[in-house]
Picture 1: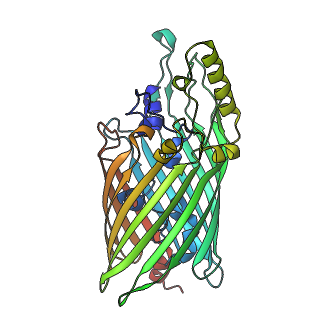
Picture 2 (picture 1 turned 30 degrees about the vertical axis):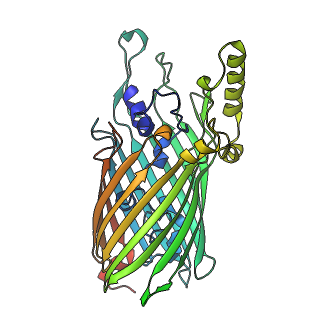
Length: 392
């Protein structure tokens, strides 16, 4: 089962072994993987970029400001392709504006993360191993609405299911899958300032995602926090010439999950062991809402360590007539908090009905299994479909 664990925990696995390496531990880590090619190409950027069909992941409150009345998108990501060839993330999303003024929208998405086929080996390697197909999935629906001409908010409700298909203390029986429920809440603001003689666009957004119950593996014996995450960002778009636009963006994100106690942070001896056990039990019994507030002040290294938990995304997008796109970006995570560091590059092409986007990841962290990750997204614009069939 080690292969499946590698697939789930890979983003934080290649820097372990140091006493100061202390990433935030969560369950269902695949919920944090960027599903679409556009956001990934810009270094995992999306809190305040122009709305698109995949805003459900980045910031669902953007949908009421979308240019099209509705769209459906399909994304596919071969994951850890440098190591194995059967782990992948598939993502289906869509939205539709409702109301006479198009000032509100309903949206939905389905995420499926397959960890491929894994063969377990029981203790003693006596034979009788099982072939398993572990996976994680989620399905959600959302509603967003303009509260003014410039500001909107959105909410999403999500069902999550994780089936790793095994028990860590494997004795011939499988553990049950783990379910959880979560919600997102978000906001988005956009304005059109005049800079020189040009009309530009300045936007900012925020999204608190996966606020919900814990996910409990092994019949509830090992509860884990969901990857509750705060993402805030801003994007500025300005014209280079007629039909030529350039957008520059910045996102900051932080897991709102309490830091799990480590034995190394406690004194040696019986008293230290007792203190560690009490701290671990307190962490394990902590409610998710309490954990959100604790996550801002519980790191062993104090405020400086809290700052290390903030991931940074910098990205840019060039567009010609909203038909041809070039993108690039960089994502940085502190080496002591996971060590995800990579460049993203990508391109896109749009017609009346279809839009195809692709991205490629170039990892800068040494020996990163995320290097050379590809993503593909195909979008169907519903307004274009209606025009083809002559419907108004």
